[in-house]
Image 1: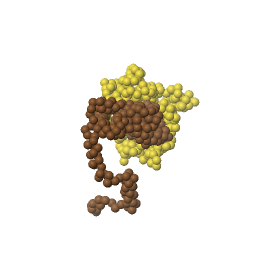
Image 2: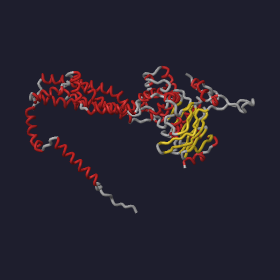
Image 3: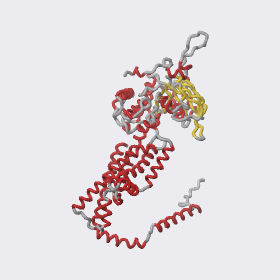
Image 4: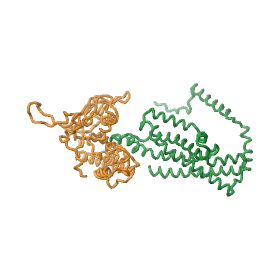
Length: 268
Length: 290
């Protein structure tokens, strides 16, 4: 007769598994120690935070400050949109080279993926520093930083999206004698388009978030205002910048979510 | 363009294309009975598809082996067998979509196995495929999907979408759509069609290039019985009208016997049945599914 006794809720870990858990725990404590984690500082920080808020509140909403910050925010959005759009466009051919089994051989796929991995591994603020050196201070360096960051992000995910498409339509076109490029253009890319749209919109959100801090290293945008505000202890203006960034980033995320639902929802 | 202009010569008529004669002079020219004796010439039907001891394995799994047959021009052949018998795999081997593990496939008097990619593409441009799941591109128009059937003959961006396509190609695609009764839906998005309509679009895409051979992999398996019957009737009407050689797989014994001139049966990794449909009864095929 079948044994109907319910099995134990948890299995006793093996000695190796137990050592693994222990090593993980030690690693976390080691990292906390390296990061200077201090309960004392955690406990004493709320009063300091409250002190900052009391000196920053109310935010500086005077007309000339709002006007200046408004234009800087427009510049920030210009950097983000220009960099993201050009990055998305450039990502497509790069993704075609990175996607396995489409138009390029394994060596090209692997090399392209390694390059994309390198681009992603370098933070956008580091790319901004590099481009400030290369093209000088200003928004152009920021746009290039956003562009290359977007290529690293979208190139990888566009490639994954194309690899994951259903193979049937591509096989049917291959069966007509179509060349690889024709098959990709007519079957693979249309099938991956909803995923492309979703990824591209996420890249735009990411670009807007990144572009707000590129000014810290002189790559244009509103970030420089934040730095100046803190450097001069002008906390009300700094708070205005922070609130402005929050409103714009949340607004862009909402718009992006709406666009994603409209575009992908209609296409599905 | 009239339907007549799309028709292919019959089995005996379309014998000796200039490029074909060099490959298979024995099949391209009528053979003579009693060679050298002055007896009257007896035309031998040309062979469009030939499998010689074809084998296929995926890793350690042998799908089939020692499969041999010759399929005559203008005839319909049903390929039957249980799930996993290798029908679809054999179909893909015949088209050169996947490599064989052994043996040789000759398609339209040319060796498909070991052909160079460009030669294989040129060969595929002369055949059409209708799949079980129709495999049309959902986010494009019906007309663009049909135009894709011309990519093998005229590749490039001008055939990627109906917006860019040359007038002649658009007319050709509209004609194919008219044949399947969907010309009025040319601009509809393909993902807004019913299953039966989608399969008709797939048929239009397969016939738009006026193929000499049509392969169909369970063309009505994903359709309800009535839509399936309609699609099969339409498919074979068009194929027979144009004298196209057809190879189709089916689980439906009735379809195999009704639409096939010849029936090939795969079982246990071997070709277990090869007979004319008229000589078979349903019970003869049921053994393949045991």
